[in-house]
Length: 292
Image 1 (cartoon, rainbow, N blue to C red):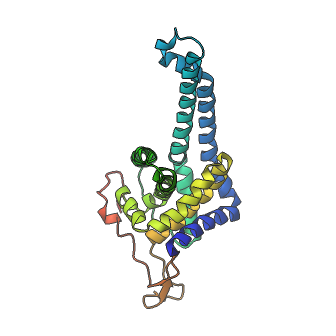
Image 2 (tube, one colour; image 1 turned 180 degrees about the vertical axis):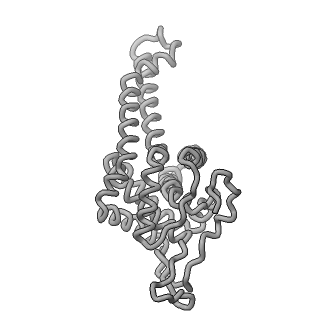
Image 3 (cartoon, rainbow, N blue to C red; image 1 turned 30 degrees about the vertical axis):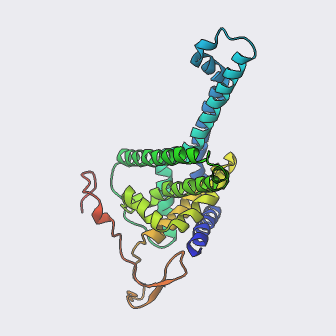
């Protein structure tokens, strides 16, 4: 319960951060606006051509009489549009993060700086960062679709399908949304994707407390655009909890080794300073990474 509330606090803190840094809020909305415009155009085209698509898919019904031909093709046209809308909802965050990789990289770095320290820049070309993000997003999308098929099948179970399954669906969607949003900050900390998922699974209430309320916000298209910059900022704050950045020594020269330090998001205390990134050594050497 404590982590659940902490996840919600990170979401609120992220929105407050961008509200207090208006330029970065507008900056972070650009990728979401671009993605939404592209999806709207695609959905309008799909809506206009859905009847033609249904007719093309059912040539066997050309000789059917009324009302069966119209009923069949009307249902198929509705299913085609509904499927496109579902794909848009599932993939919107992943596509926005891919389109906005340079934007959100800068936003994460700014959040880290304002909160007291940032990890060193990865030092790899932008094209490689985009490739890694696209590969990781496709993997997460495949996991979401796999869970979606399983939950869809479970939806036919009496009682459970109408009560437990919808709740489980929101939880699964919220967890993987957190994985996607935190990926920007965790990738900067050289945490591989399998380790990101493991870290968030180990703090499942924290991930759900952040992701599930965000899923509910993202059901409203306009709120998706407005909340995306704050969601990335909040995910960066959450990532700082999962993989803390080693803080600089105090200006007075005290390294703080014996002084307790508050652990973000938990309310507890740990001996300081925080360790550096323990996951960097687990990543295979990158030939594109700049060497010291």
